[in-house]
Image (tube, rainbow, N blue to C red):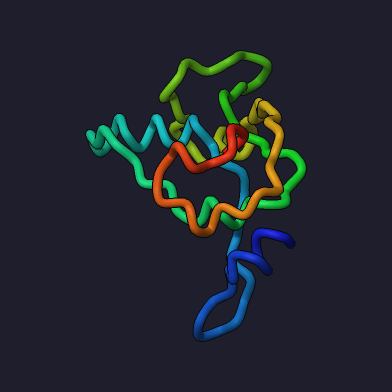
Length: 109
């Protein structure tokens, strides 16, 4: 709910809430493998200010077996059965909306 409200994550036309979730590194790695990009742009980091703990999906397991990095299940049924392993990181309370460089961000950001 915090991400929806602070980030204004509602459809412009319909007003429906958008689907928001934690960063999934497995998806990011898979997308990089498919598309060949070598950099990423992180936007709306300021929306996370005030969130006590942040979760990041770091790996997948399917039927009790850990999948290799950048590996995605080939079918929707298997994808639906995936368990995501998360790490939990501390959040921050400092206002970062005026930061213009990485050095100005709090350590947790």
